[in-house]
Length: 527
Image (cartoon, rainbow, N blue to C red; front, side, top):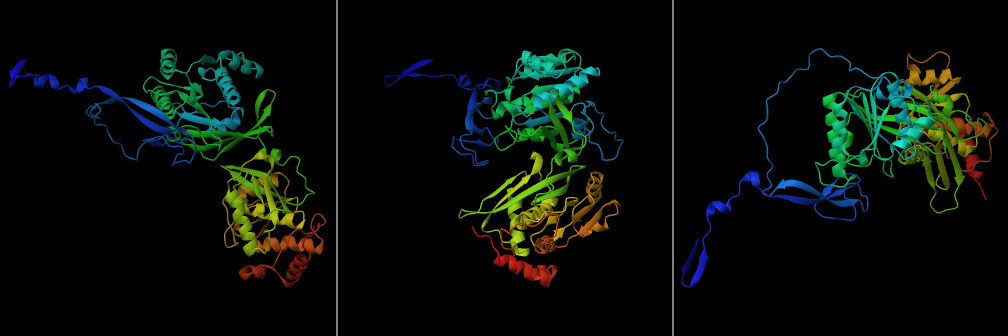
């Protein structure tokens, strides 16, 4: 309607036309900036992520489908029944693959409806292990589907032919659309196992982001997990890793899945370690050991013998550590090298162990053991490429360091285990019986450990345990062998000064050992 008043033409609009129902509210897109390394969300772009401190990892993503007024449509919730803690419980059924090391890590096999996240570096053997597991399950009559988002079907067939698994009834597809994958799996007979290789290549129409972004990885994982829970199919998601060994993508995916398994190994060694860091249906920190062969990955039933193979028993600076990975006892050699430094700041290098743990052991040795390493480079390595995170390796690392320092070879038929505290005391560790039984099975006759381990009722009879209460006692024993010319090998010229321990630790050193320390101090290494 148009009216004229005071020479001005005015237009009147019906108020009903100005109001828009909520159902017809215009949707708008909201841009966010998401870190592709850790999944942190910010309102603006920045060069460094404040959560994970990664540079150039923040990208812009768009979240579509948000109403203009910011409100989301919701429906009334339903009431569901609550249950108590008491009731009949049964162990979950499992699908055994026939690969003993893989079944050991998963807790006895795949649980129907579970989702496993498998991560590992490129070329480590993830696809080889999974195609072997798929072939074993397909031979036993299970329907197995292998979805590859990185390789073509012909490439997967070539790998299966190399592994002598081309005749197994494994169903293959090269697809990256999650919606199409779920529709295809729901059409036929329910699969027992579905492998998605890899989750970073999947995408879904429910979000407006590029494949590989944090939003797409999270949405694709949610859709596949929902399918696994509703259908009872076991799903394995293969994930990429970052340069520091962490699973790429949002950390929330690790919380969503039932198990997180990592495939570790070194290109210079022929064996691989399958390690479970999370498992809702089995033990955590369990490991499986595989050996890379021309026919794929073979199981290693006795990994301790593999890690100790080729050990040089005539060299100083090596100690055998009786460790425990999950429920499996494991013997591994820890090697140390202490050499005079030509730099102003001594070098500290470690492979297979925590560098912070090495710094702590070095500080305890100098403060409570009288070992002076301020003018020496220290190198420590776990032989075989295995990574150790157990605190019980402190005593073995300390023995290897002192052995390399004094040139005294440690007893070749003895193992070491024990946690070293900041006061220098050797603290007890768990499962002493399992460690000693594994050592006795491989022919070791002696062990050096905490005092509390000597009273373990599960300790075997064929091995003698020498209790060590303080780190100063271990240093005194090795240094006295160097001064007396004893030990399993003649000592070389000392390369560092070993002083008498101060404080309560000095009780572990008698007068003869003190004189030996003083003579070593006067006989310091000169270029």
